Picture 1 (tube, one colour):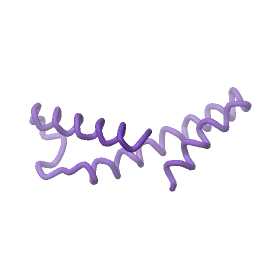
Picture 2 (cartoon, helix red, strand yellow):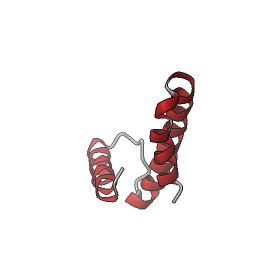
Picture 3 (cartoon, one colour):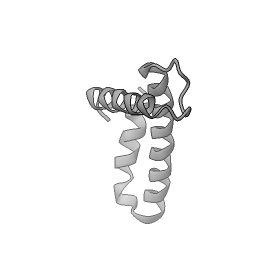
Length: 73
């Protein structure tokens, strides 16, 4: 996910979460904290996608691997 897209998504997510005030996020949450957690979540999803591609469509493994590499930089 591009930097601008990620930032916009996180800002929108935090704004909506604060408006709902559902107690899901700590009251003092910033984009950097949520960004760190979302990157971990993205990495987990990319690894699961790579596992799927290895078992079902080996020719497509480069797609999740490229995502994993970009998340690790």
